[in-house]
Length: 165
Image (cartoon, rainbow, N blue to C red; front, top):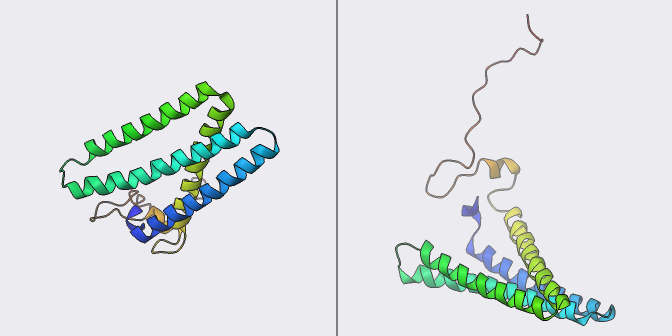
């Protein structure tokens, strides 16, 4: 299924995601100020910023590991992911200890960023391209002639729907 997800789609998803995160951050800040809780809005902006930072660093990490020629790419990617998520977690929990409103805003911003990213990726995969129906997705094959995503249904002979005898 992901074989049909091309690089131009990824840059489009990234652009839309960051743009939407910026708009949502401004809206969250304006709403929080108008409801008298600036720290939640500020936390949401920080969370959206941390989500954007993580998203950008994923791309940099994958590009760096791909260019390095390392045979086992999983280990450096796993270490980079662990470090990034560790930093984000420490920042989020630290801000939660400083102020609960600020911390909840950060966690909300991180959650909203992930939902925006998920929706944009799903939208990009759903629009056009070689796979345009549910059957195409179910019967899609993985790259390099690997077996299909789902095994073919078992062959079924004629059935007797008369109820017996």
